Image (cartoon, rainbow, N blue to C red; front, top):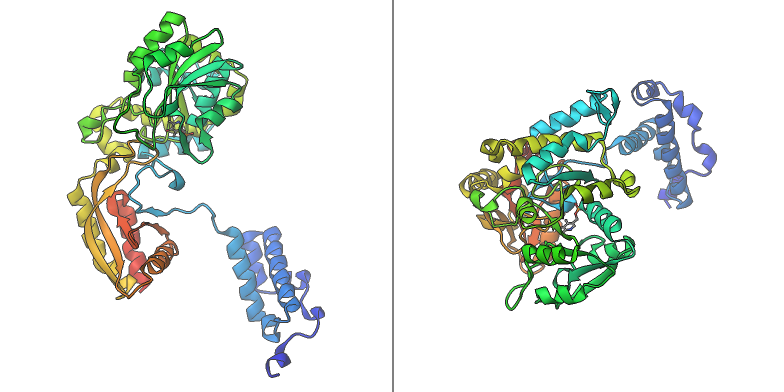
Length: 473
Ligand SMILES: *Cc1c(COP(=O)(O)O)cnc(C)c1O
């Protein structure tokens, strides 16, 4: 057959690594990437050629200098490409866990950069010259904002809950309402976390209704804690009842048992005053008598991934002396970012402008609409005539479990397939094309259409997108 003429007869025809390294054009590659990485790319290229040989698909042409060169360059490109990529979040979910949750404010970015570039007083007391405690750097600010007596910070809120349970209730019972035994997503399920923390879960009440007497009847000599868990990503509606933390704390006080709250998102501000759905604040929970409250750093707070544990000094000190704290502690970059975010909360007048998440949560829909309308013709051209592109109102979500039911009026583009049938496949293929843009665009699939919600599109990303769409036509 004609094709077989071009097949390479033996593997001996492959050049050696050394021979390739000595090629003239290699010098620039070695200069740029170093011999180690270039050698690895060459090996990968040769491996691929051997695999082709085994499939009887290796042709003489593949061994031409130009072909070898582009294969090795391709391997070098793959080896050096960042796997962590920036993406454009047009899902409409502001705090998207899979896309890294909160975007940090500029001041936090600066603080992190500085902490990365320089030694910092992470555990060094500058007034005494002795060893310090990393929590001390930000405890004062957390306490001033939340009204807590003391605070500590760990890697995330899951770690905060785990450490709280393990410290205050190991080998003892924790009473939780059946209506609050939630799964947050991934592998965070309250009953599993309790088991791992060495705590016995004492469930009370029913899925829809739990009364104060349910908790009261559960209390026995092994009870270590009464705990409330924010339902985050779902809501029990209709014939339902939960016990307020004030009542639970009062009950606990009568029995000398702490009442604690895993607040999840844990906002520090009155969301309604920003036109957002109501959400209980950390301060309110503490004021109502919760002895310890845990919440995330990268949900509504708008900061870095972290778990904040705030409350009574005696409990916080016990939590801090648990050896597991050492494993769950945060690094200097997290503390630097968190401090900068807390600083913004100390200036409430500027918060909505400077705290990135709050700015995106509160964007006006006419501003979002203007963005959608600017991008509509570009996207229409890019998508082609088989899609009808509508600029239309839609609803964004806060995300990360905050206020799952309520949503924010927003605006965006809807790509609707014009062809007959197979609308779902067409939408799936379009979503994939969007992800394959040089900066991947992540939308959402709904009703056999692709929706791009413009709420989270930053001005820089919009400019980027305009450039990308114009180039890929
Ligand atoms: C999100 C959430 C968690 C987990 O917090 P991470 O910061 O993601 O570890 C725990 N509990 C509740 C109620 C939550 O909403």
